[in-house]
Length: 584
Image (cartoon, rainbow, N blue to C red; front, side, top):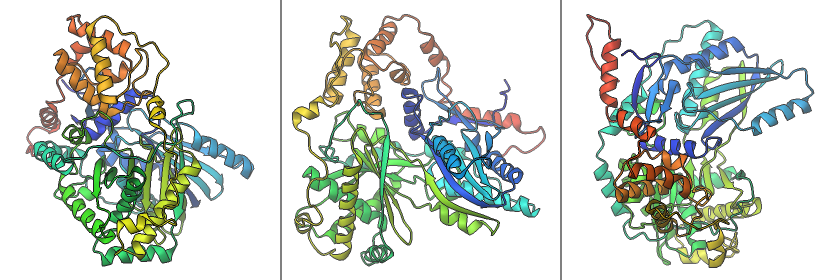
């Protein structure tokens, strides 16, 4: 059988599976649909610009990838042989500057959902506001790219653009395909990685987060952001302190965040999330590869009251080095092996250290014809708070928060406290944790109100009927929910509105398969997001009533045969009489 417009097939990795679960649970959400925008000033040759973008799509397999899960136990990545980039040019020169700004602001604020079944999973829109003034928007889905790729792709686009403008033939080596990383990943010993993380989180008992000011489900699910820019003098002092302590700026910001969380949670054993590049150093050319490598991992930092801040920093740095070998381990496996057995998250905040400065990369590549300015993104995560650290001559710290949990005032106070901790760690690294915690100018008061235990229990209470069907499946789902989430669930309440997330649904799916002695695609947990609908679906399977979804699932075991399919397809594409050599 010859497949149309298919270059390669291989399984989705663990992070992509988690993202796909979010896509299925919230199909209209744009949380994973990333947006990069910037101003372009200069005489832009639009034909050459579009041609450069399309060339980049043609060169990199990840940019021509779609995802298929329907009827499969696990999702597949399918690389299209060809994919035409959706391109849109909007000329606003006939409008006043105020009207232009309104048009662009409206477009920027609109939700752009990029579907995982359509290639390429990205699009480019160019607004022209003057003869030499433009605003560029580039949308893409996080399934195919991470932040590291931004500078790589944009640099290549502008390299190709400049070559076309100057009539130069640009010769680039074939891009290293994402499949080479997937091949590497499939060979890794996950048991060894699981053992490392089990030891790393040994005796960890309770996740910490900033105290909830409120959870108001009546508010729209939205995001806010506050930021602070540290002046050049203090930034240089921070870098100097890092050099003297033989640590990194990343370690300093992680420790500052851990100490902030620990102070307000009254804990000296803190776990929070950190985004890591996930690019294995032993994989050749990995630093130039395009695709999703990033992983969110738990970072654990511990101290005692009399610990010196410098020692806390050094211990955290050593721990960071140990983690690097196991960055590829999926968070779901890490949590499964953790002594903290609840189905809730290991952490409720995430810290991202941007070591891929897009602006610097573009400034190095662009000539005098086009200038780039006002770079912006729409970074969103599923965590109530995300801290983004942007290094530079002036260190910038962004705090992105979910407005159902926090307001702008609280977020600004948290960010100010983080800034004060960094300053104190820089100026007095030999002081103790207890000394710093006692400083009122660092910790003036709790930045957010701590709800009572009664208020906490009411955060996710549903106003629904708690009657469960007489059949056992509905009762088992209800029991598992209460075990994992600690609350009761109405039969028509949505799992995700009740506080569930991808990892807790992974756990529930595994438990249901084991206890009911059945197999069913995990995606059904997202298609049937209530006890009522899920129990009806599972009852049909338990009673052996034929299910078309299950029949498709049984017939499509292609995920496990991904490697064989790839080899067979490569042979079919190879002309007769030539050497058949595999390489990535």
